[in-house]
Length: 111
Length: 115
Image (cartoon, rainbow over the protein chains, first blue to last red):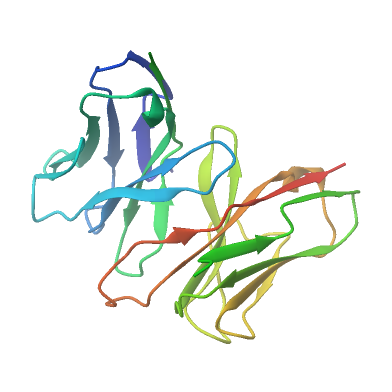
């Protein structure tokens, strides 16, 4: 059973567009919801994270929206740039701190 | 600070051969992890450690062993490599739970091919 479902698998947007990546989870015990960004040939790096006591968190051009009742959260990238082209992973974590990752979304931002 | 380092960066093995991947971190983190990344599968947890001398199984532990003899090092071993273990392996570390952050810091990865 897949504990976190991420969509879409790939996404192409024009520069300045607002790509949105979605994740859905099953277990209500999860209490930490990070997004990781990975460039080709590199390890993933934390981009932004949220806890379930807030519905939205913004850091620069990146925003997480969190819907606790629907068990969904999403990443929005405002004014996207070609340098944002990367693979994005959502993840969930419970009390033990182990991360369970989604399968990833490959984002391409065209100039 | 070098952060999390992994050696080697690339390796080609023949079926049945053994090897050890080394992960080192200089951030004094308690927790360390080994993941594998396969196309379309995301990152899957192989084994992890919550402190020196401890190890635990993750989601996909079969065919792998680990050791954490020193706090800064986490070794991943393949005793008899199989083509299904062809993957990119990532190590990560983080402070202990309650340490103020749940952020995992990843190394640059090891690309392993098993022929």
